[in-house]
Structure formats: structure tokens, C-alpha cells
Image (cartoon, rainbow, N blue to C red; front, top):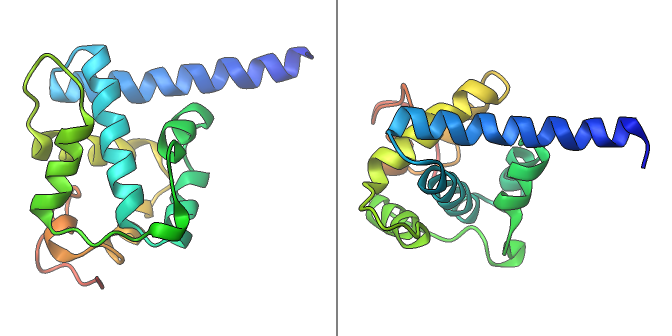
Length: 149
């Protein structure tokens, strides 16, 4: 393998650690729970999005984070209709941790971290396809923000 290919792997490992560390720091979680939380929120979001929007978001994620995101995805079965309660319950069910984690706080933290690392306006694009009750979990969005289900 060429040195350039190894640099790509090293870069994506570094970026993945940055994402996990940002979640851990913001939510005051240990690294393992932060990883589980990031994975849970991304996969739940992916399942709620139409496949085209999910793929667009996935293309912007670092390579290893993208792998977590797509793990177990069934594009022919999305979007899965979820209200806010179901969305948060699915996040909670995906987090395997010895500590109790607040799914709402975790979702808000992961969305805020996504806003730090993704291209400008990506969260706004997500807001246009999420129902208002889930959209309110995104940083800076409130019930008055326009968008579709």
C-alpha cells in the first residue's frame, strides 16, 4: 500500500476521533458511550431520512463515521416514519452503555457536533426534510422553522 493510501486511513481515524471526542466533551461522556451515542443518532437519523437525503449526508461524513452510519442500512425500507418520542426511543435502544444516557441530550449534542464538522448549511438542509418535532432537536431550530415532513 502506498504512503498516500496510509495517509488517507490515518486522516479518517483522526477525524473519527475528533467527532467522538467532541461528543464526549460536549455531553460529558466516556469515549465508549460517546461512540455509541454518535452511532445511535446517525443511524436513527439515517433511517428517518429519504434515501436520497441519507446518501447526501453520508457522502459528507468522514470515511469511518460513514461506515458507522451505513452499517445495517436498508435503503428500500426508508424513510421510517417516526415522531419525536419514537426517534428518541430508537436512539436510546441503540446505545449500549452501563450508564443511563438522555437520548434528547445526546441527539442535540450529536447534531451540534455535526454542525461543527459538516459543510455550512447541511443541518439546514436536514431541517427541510425532518418533521418539526424532530427538527427542534437541531441546534438553532425551533417550531417556527419552515420545512416538510
